[in-house]
Length: 435
Image 1 (spheres, one colour):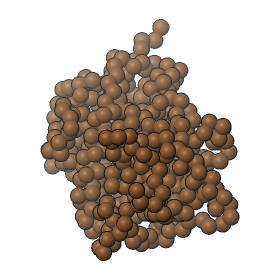
Image 2 (image 1 turned 180 degrees about the vertical axis):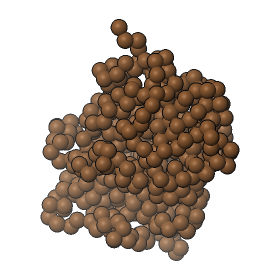
Image 3 (image 1 turned 120 degrees about the vertical axis):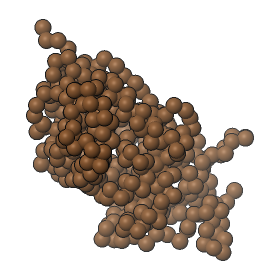
Image 4 (image 1 turned 90 degrees about the vertical axis):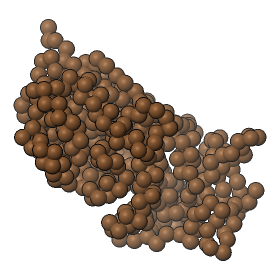
């Protein structure tokens, strides 16, 4: 079978534009320019061979402009289609920037897919085997490490957080539900319906508050405000809430929402680093914030939680996790997600959380719930809404390259959960009595 042909509309049979994207070179220098020097050509040739070898072992169909097709579906099956538009550019990006280049190639339109999640899921499932094992030993030599300027020290963290969360409240409203909750929901049935998302987000929040034993009179600390929904629901239970964030955009909108609900006297929202929090609290809740802390600062983070929690109190965390061996292999790697979405972060493993809390704190895990399949559904609903609201996103000033970046981010994340490579957990911690 040959690659898809264009019709007189300029679209192929996937409905995807083959004319390329106009890229703002000042805004997106690494997307606009592809290296063409001899080193890049050699690296691209090697990367092309490795990619074709890896793709041939996966449940994916890769189509090239010259009619080459990699991946033959078994009888009765249809494989997801990855369409390589510009093979030379795609290979050189891979060769010079690895997985960062893979994502940049999507942003540039070098490759595309009718269903990006279906394509990315088998890659995520086999991520540890895509590169031959002898070459994996060279990882630390050839893979770029995280820049010191993006480590989540007290001096860097505010700018790291701002780069993502201060993009625009309107942008996040374009794909989140009415609760403006930017973390996994907890559904009661699959497949999840769009009109169920807000209810599922509140179900997740209520479960966390229950796990932390939040009720009337509870002094609650929330680390990572989001846009205020958890603070609202805790205050409605009668808790006295202190919430901290490093996003000025989030703080402003969360305060407006708190005021509109008539709960200003019950909720305090501070622009503050977790390391600078003082006081003692009956309960602490933190939702998908540990991912932004960074490997070097996990002991500091958990030590702060230990210091701030009164004896007998509970901590309820929602954390995205990854396998421990992959965390160790990638903890110093600079990734596409770091470069374009979340600078300075790292997903922890369950083993890392348990070992750090035992070594550095009196906190011990007393309950755990895994629900990674719920995150896959959450991301699907976000991605569908973002795509449906693309015109609105454009009017906000975000160009086509940004939209493809965000689509790739949501699809890439969804694929991680669908493959089982990523998980999300509710982890409840309590203080162990000192001898």
